[in-house]
Image 1 (cartoon, rainbow, N blue to C red):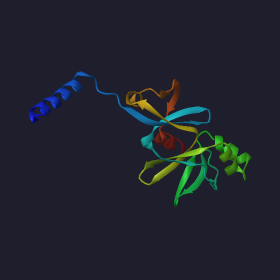
Image 2: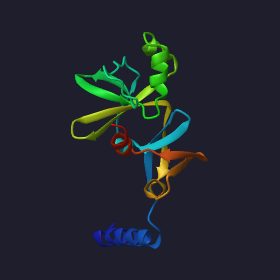
Image 3: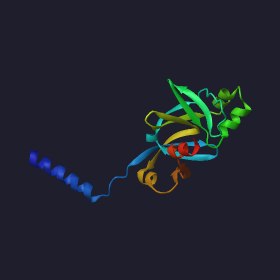
Length: 162
């Protein structure tokens, strides 16, 4: 095959792409439950997901945070904006790490700016693909398998609770 015929093939394939709409790209998202609400966030926002560690309560009561834990030498606060886990921790003061493990709780760790890391508790953590249009839309929810999940923005939660 001559180089001219190869060139024609590439030109044809480019013109074929122009005929069709842009291929829809999906965004990989993380869906989870906290309290009675379902949330969904872009996987790009997440630093890591870990099993629930031993959390040390703050010496001064803070209604929107459970406490802190050590993540490889970094002290990371655990947010609890609706005080679900604070109430459980109060009920089971000395057994709370075991109780949280039985609940199959995970912590989603977010880096909200350079060097500033926070963790958010979650149940039923899973991965899904969502169309980029839906992720970037103005709607406050995303449908995953027909179930509405609220869009989760950790920066908004941190600003409102710390």
